Structure formats: structure tokens, C-alpha cells
Length: 77
Image 1 (tube, rainbow, N blue to C red):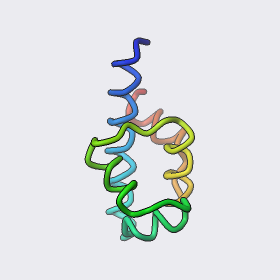
Image 2 (tube, one colour; image 1 turned 90 degrees about the vertical axis):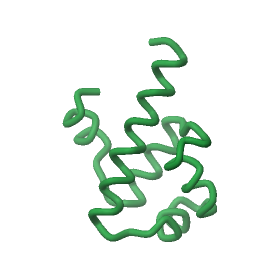
Image 3 (tube, rainbow, N blue to C red; image 1 turned 135 degrees about the vertical axis):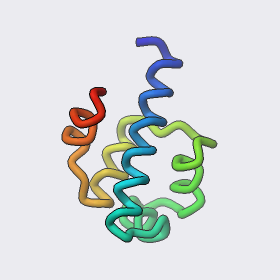
């Protein structure tokens, strides 16, 4: 995969995680607290101002109680 393809995949995955966060009624502030980061960082990832790396994606998934392997299989990534 190229760097551009990896960035696109990360953005698509964060979109899936954001949707799941909304479904579960979890706020960005709650995610940020669980990730030990700021709500503005979470917002930056969700709004594609920053591209999350794998570590951030895993922490985000953990913060909302998601299994990232399930999400990647569901979306075909």
C-alpha cells in the first residue's frame, strides 16, 4: 500500500469508529479521557484534520469498547 492508501484507510476506519461512538452515546470528551489525550485531538482525527496512526486507532477503539478487527472485517479492509 502507498502512504496515500494507508491514510485513506485510516480515515475510513476512524469514520467507522466515530459512527460506533455515536451509536453508543459516547462523547469525544469521554473518548479523550479514556485515551489520555485532549478532546481537540479526538475532534481532529474525526474531522480528518489529522490522520491517526495504528496506535491511535487501537486506543480509540479501546476507548469506545470496539474490537477493531471486527470493524476492519465488516468494512472489507
